[in-house]
Length: 310
Ligand code: XMP
Image 1 (cartoon, rainbow, N blue to C red):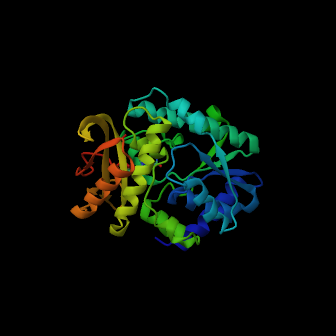
Image 2 (spheres, protein in one colour):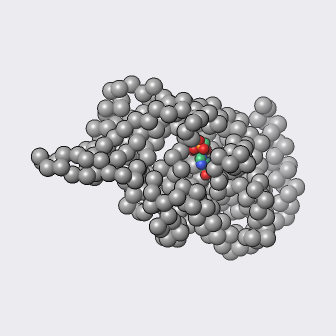
Image 3 (cartoon, rainbow, N blue to C red):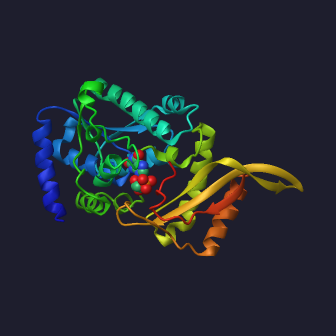
């Protein structure tokens, strides 16, 4: 693809759609929403308000890192803290699709609130082609896909959704992000799902369980970085495994390490992680998170598995 031409066309398209109006961009720091935000900022400048919803489901230090990276590009990011609302919406839910639905509903509710507050009528969103294909195909319910599944956000939520990169797959989005001058740290970043660490917590999503998976994710990312996998992270299971501490049996948490190679996330293969790296991760996780008694490495491709756990 010709990224330069794509950017030129999209900027013109966004200008035409938004006109004199104002728009809000839903920035999560991932490559998709970052590319969209940078595109929209180029297209409509001060008519764009960039919002980062802090849902409590982000990786370590993410909101601040994103704010800093965009400040360097002259784009102001407003972080709004809705952690309590997200955890309240997810309380007691264990079914994967029920969790996704709850996330989607609360996301649009709080975002709708922010959009209305700002008087903007447009929401810029980083939906990509794989999201649309998988939601239509019934693989999952993406939180950012209302229009494609026949829900009119204007009727239900009071604003119009604009999705400038919805025809691209991940590699195309990376090219666009690079073309827009985003730092490599952003355009080459591992994909991170919109519902964040929620997709890596089996069972109920509580602040304690998310904090645990966040810490484990940090260790996995650090130790596996040199392999440059497509995606690598930790998952918290909803069962306990027996361990031993000071000669006594104890039941602890089980963490799964997931690392995959893929081009567009439609299919994936497990990364052949060297055993010494796996051992280092296991040792660090059990030492740094004492409530974990077991660490396992997952070796299922996609299909039949998906990349995330819910
Ligand atoms: P799965 O788990 O379906 O994931 O194999 C494929 C790719 O999509 C990411 N993913 C999401 N991204 N919202 C997103 O923005 C979501 O709800 C979502 N669910 C999964 C996942 O990280 C992988 O890269």
